[in-house]
Image (cartoon, helix red, strand yellow):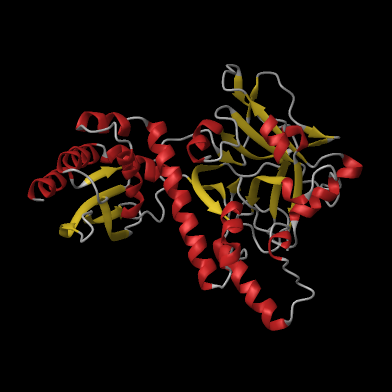
Length: 406
């Protein structure tokens, strides 16, 4: 115990970006089941936030030699492990418990020495896979706990299966290196390419996404791993979203990662340009909102037929999984996952526009929210959906837009 605690104290504090991990008292504790627990504090030096938590460092059942090798490798790898947590969360709401994902390597009996553990920790793809798996396990445990509390235990398996790992787009903080992912502004297009139009209207760039940046958060691997994803919309007047008369109101382009002649392209005169806002991707898992088609077949939720008391109980239960959109939570920009309806069910709107695909087979591709200096109508949101089979095939021509506002 003393040797292991000395290892920890020698390796802490550890720092990566704005994240700083420190040793906290009472130190290393041997639990009654034979596992080792340590109390750690995780600081965000940008925001001043601090989370202190006792975390399981080593689960029960390990030999002393293997425990020592693992702890030594864990301490040496803390900067890269912290970097993974920061990348996936954007530095927000970090807790020391997020570092428990590294214990997955202990399930591999072939790994015994410090060098072997370090090799596993040095592979960023392996570390990200561990983190994604740990996130999914934590989410599943939370879903099942809520189901027990709300007497929905018989639906827990089905609700766990509905979880989707979305990607939040949060503002890039001062001091962070500039990336190619941004909302608004102008795109990088092939030299000489024509600006996208819808009939005679030049379209507005809603977002340009560097897929290499989002790939570390795309746990379901729904998007291409690299290249640029560019989302344009026609924001002109009341007919902007009359797809049947004017054609699709959104256009999704991709630029391949090997493209060498991409240049920042100025918009034609008269184009509505939204302010350039640099954003970073963060993991943002969610379950469907109540106003969606996913629960109807799942539970027989009958908004018209339920008695008031039963309806109130069910509404409270499902809102626990995906709280309604609140002005205090905005802006809420997202890729993948589930949409936050501002008015009614946008999935059914897509199915009406393209009846080939039922509502539950439409995948949110992007949700772009209004901001004080980037209003979309009357404080609205634009949702871009795509059939799941089209997304799997990389066919973005079938994307469908929905615009909701107050």
